[in-house]
Amino acid sequence: MFGTKQEVYPPTMNVKKLLLPAALGFACFSASLFGQAVETTKKATKAAAQKTVDGAKTVANKTAEGAKVVGEKTVDVTKAGAKKTVEGAKIVGEKTADVTKDAAKATKKGVEKTADVTKEAVTKKKPEAAAAISGGSASASEIASAKAKGLVWVNLESKIYHKEGQHYGTTRNGKFMTEAEATKMGALASKSSAAKKK
Image: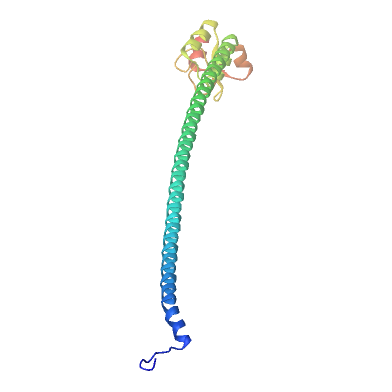
């Protein structure tokens, strides 16, 4: 006992010796746990970001597909509308053409009927009416008919009547009538007609 020297450590030193490795171990463990937590957070963040990107891509794809479908449907509807418009315009055009043709036929028939009625009325009336309707001078058939009936041609401007000759039925403003009617209205016989009378 007397020959050896024993080292006596204060009690706090022993505790430090014991606690230091434990503290270091705990710090390493904590650092490891923190590193794992950071790594897990990174992975989770990356996964969430990827899901967001994937979701955005899916939405963009769906939007593009939807827009494409809407565009195609719009084009189809527009084509169908244009086709119906063209068909409608064609039908309207055909109907208009038919109505125009019918109107033209009706007009032609009406004109022909009016001409027939006028011709019939003129034929039934006295030849002088025919001459008046024809604008003053008579046609060859009217002249022949008037000659056969013994009518004279009165020039209404000069008040001279002709029984025959180049002026018979040809002066600009005249008409057929009997010689008695001509003298009654004050018309005088032409020189050639007066010579034949004598």
